[in-house]
Length: 168
Image (cartoon, rainbow, N blue to C red):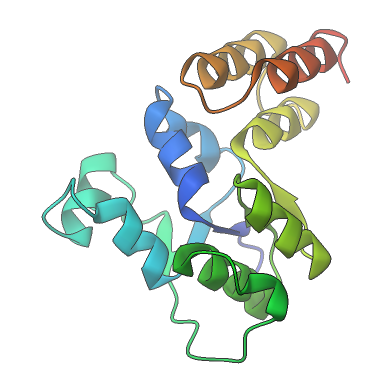
């Protein structure tokens, strides 16, 4: 659908959304569709849910998540040391020409080398604040929740919290 707000995602940011109260509700303020490769869905389901459908139903995100096959295209050497989910999510973002949600450091570095615009969930909180989608109180609360869930470190938490408090 034209005009849809779309982003690709690796596994980590989706796990982060699971850990936030109303995490998936929050991300819907920014995106209509999160596209993922099958490898990411498999990683999300593994060991916790009987099937992908069970996972999607549990979080109420059947309409938010779209699984796209990335095929067996040639892989950039930057991707060789990454896990399958990271490799495929980076390839998917490149193929679909969309930004990528990714949190793991090696994956972020590889994605940036390939020219992708990247962000983690903390960056999305700040974007939502700057875009007027959430107020300073909600942004501060979300950043605190990310920190308390161990999804961002103290330095990132303090830096982003200060930026939000100053209105940046």
